[in-house]
Image 1 (tube, helix red, strand yellow):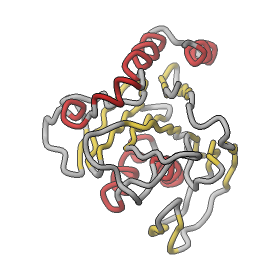
Image 2 (cartoon, helix red, strand yellow):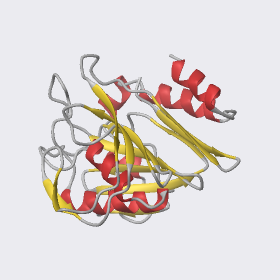
Image 3 (cartoon, helix red, strand yellow):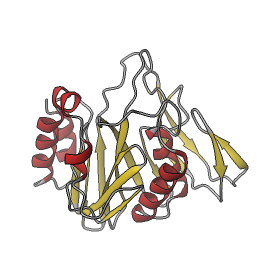
Image 4 (cartoon, helix red, strand yellow):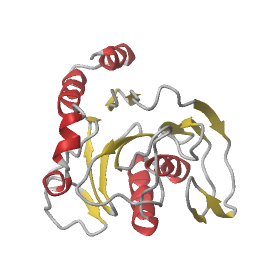
Length: 236
């Protein structure tokens, strides 16, 4: 299973994620203190401008990648990503989805600002690169981004993107935003049905993502705390 979910309750943000990465892939839990920008930064595959001071972050990171699958920053921003399968050709190099998770945490001052950080980086540098540990695996990405005030789903297809605010939300290995996005960019047209236009149907179907996302969303309707999210993550 690879599903990410989160909700807001009584001034708190609750976040949970399952991962289906390779069972042989080491995953590290790391704390990185605040750091100053150094002019340039080497991400997993490309070098980018390292602008401004970076927040302290706690990350869950595949050992061979610079980026993270999920994490939280000192500002209380939480982000997790999911592979999504789209109709366009995937980038052979660029920022990985996990690079974008880490950069959003390092530079996002809030959930809304982290959406903008990731979107701006996506438009400037593009996304891409092999993300499989023991096999080639290319894909685009969606993100669940939250703090104690907002929950956002951010979905991408190449450099195109759309985002929407929620109180409770879950993402899986599929695009889900339709023509109801609050924010959009990278060439996404006004009122575009993002999922209908960009979702690749075959991989999305065989990932079981529709059923898994339905289960996660159903679990969220009555979730009130950590035990409810733990039960949801254990559901198969």
